[in-house]
Length: 269
Ligand SMILES: Nc1ncnc2c1ncn2[C@@H]1O[C@H](COP(=O)(O)OP(=O)(O)OP(=O)(O)O)[C@@H](O)[C@H]1O
Image 1 (cartoon, protein in one colour):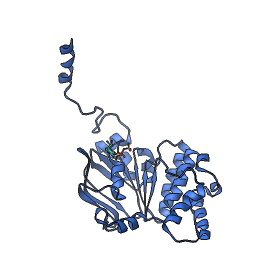
Image 2: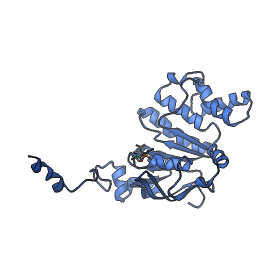
Image 3: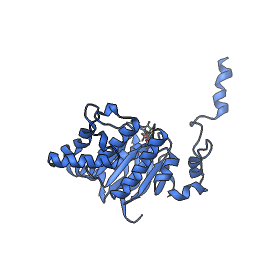
Image 4: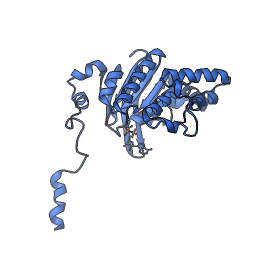
């Protein structure tokens, strides 16, 4: 992991007194697709928000391209964010704008490019996700899968070095899901990006990622090359990869011992 674009060291974070991250260490090497896997609510989005500088660590650090994110002033943070693309489960597209104008929006906001150049760039980005022909549509006319592809085109609008996907596969039909997975891989390699995919979808992420981290209880509990995960003996990996209800990830929400709880019954009678 010598040349990491993102380095997270001993990252701690809590919402109030609810500790979510309790010492996360991980590295995202340049040029790779890295998946961060964990059950819903384990803190994956919280982790991404530290990379984007929307949250400040309680302890530890997140460095992107050699810069410690929470130490940057507003101007430097803004400049760094311009080099990061994000795609979320909820597309965040402007519903009153056309597909074309949604992609053009970040270009118009963040660059001084003339309209004819923006025009060509927008069509190139849409072509990359197979939707050049849809540039005139309103976002309300798009299917869920198309909407996510438009969001992807917008995420690459400013030629980022890093792209972050938050649950990119959630709620898609199998064909759209495959399309998005292929695009994540293809765009990463063709555009020389580095990609972070946070998801609970193990099988899809193992197809698309080079390396995976498993997050549980606020720490990384397992990691390795995606290709080696299917045959791993690690109990966490086995539970995730084979979707087993029993294993180190507990079925029961933490509770008092059963006998103690049952005492409440007879006393009430
Ligand atoms: N703004 C907030 N204030 C308080 N608690 C929060 C806030 N945002 C998230 N949480 C809590 O922190 C925990 C981690 O949330 P986070 O969204 O990072 O998890 P996640 O792994 O991305 O889950 P999901 O895949 O369901 O989005 C959850 O228990 C959530 O309820």
